[in-house]
Length: 266
Image (tube, rainbow, N blue to C red; front, side, top):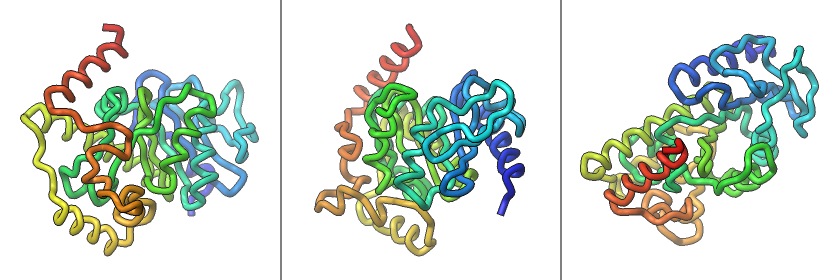
C-alpha cells in the first residue's frame, strides 16, 4: 500500500498526464484520493495540474473541511462532488474530473456515450450517461451525479466535462482516458458515415467476458438500470439512460459543432 507522500507524487504524475494529453486547459480539472473514512488528498484550486509538486496537495475531511494545506493552497472548489462519490460508493478510493475535448463536446451537445462500437469500451466502461447541468462549486453537481453512482463508474457532466472514479487513482484516470478515446472514435466514425454497432448477442458476449474477468466497480453487465426495469440494456436504449434521444448523424454533427462554437464564443 502506498504511503501518503507516494500518493501525492502519483497525483502530481497524473496531473502531468492529464495536462499533457490536453484533457484540461490552464487551471482546470481536479482529482482526489481516499486515505481513510475521514481523510482525503485533493488537488488545489487555481493551479495548473501539469505543474504540481507534492507540497501543492491538500488534505480534507469527509465534509471537505481543510485538514492540511501549505501556504496559499486551498482545496478544489469542486471537492463537494468528490465527497458525494465517496459517501455513496464506499468501494471507491479515487475520483478524477477533467475536460477532455471530445467527451466534453458530447456533454455540451447533450449526447451520452451509449453506442456499442468497440469491445474495450463495452467491457471496461459499459455506458457513459450524462448528469444534468449543475453550477460549479455548488451542491447541484453532486446531486446530479448521485443518480448514476449506483450503476456506473463514470459520467459526462452536461456542459462541463467528465467525471470518473475507481478503486485507485490510476484506475480512475484510465477510465478518463478510455472515455475520451471512446468519444473521439465515436465522433470520427459518425463523420465517416456512422459506426457499425454491435448487436444484442455481441453485447451479451462482451458483458459475459467482463463478468468472467471479475472487474471491480459498477457496470451495465450487472446493474443496468434499464435492464433491471425490464427495458433494453443501456447499449440498446438509444441514449435513454442519459435522457437524450439518438439523433440522425447529420443532426448529431451539426448539434455538436454548433454547441461547441457557442461555448467558444464563435
